[in-house]
Length: 325
Image (tube, rainbow, N blue to C red; front, top):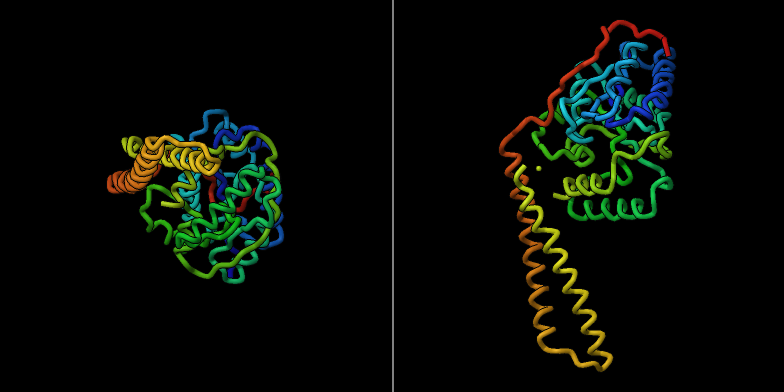
């Protein structure tokens, strides 16, 4: 194989604090790979600005002007991590033989980049980065993530345990990904469906270098919902949590009444009737809510609206990159 052109695709949302810290690390790694002849001098680091509200785009402009290894695209507005990553993959695939995606906070160990490239040179077209452990995550996040992966697998999804969005994809795989028209993107579920020769590399996950996580609980729940199953379908989505609360409350009340009955305390028959009605209502609303989610998704998908628009693209000519770091 000829020396491959490798792009890094790095989504950014309000990351003005971490960019000046993480970018020199990535630049050094890429320059070392170029100097050693492992990758082409036309390789680049492509940052994707996901409609940031801070000075992220200004920082990216400065980095672009300082080093020809750095390129950047900016979405016209915030479209979410998965859409930003998709935009980066599609843009980079126009120039690169393979694209490696990872988060800008470098919680995914950048040392894995060289190992992924080795696997690509060996003939693998998909290289999954898998965390050895999740010690840097909170107890809640660690165990809910584990439960979520297991649930998806039980439902038939092809999910790689402890794999997020750190991966290498060949140009051919990215072109195949472009054939998927879904608007509710869940890349870690879509990539295994594409096929092609794949392998896994393991790495230790680190803490963020600076700033705060851009994946709060609400964002993680939204991503999880996309994995298991957004204008005027919100009313439909309200039915599900309301039904779940009613169902959960009736179960709690039923357990309390049973305990009271077992302890010899008399329970009014109307209490049992009320709990039974609440249980059935909660169950029906939960089922209706699930149907509502599917109908809401169909409503969005059939419109076939664009996922995003690219408002700016900072690109260098494809000559050898300078060695300014």
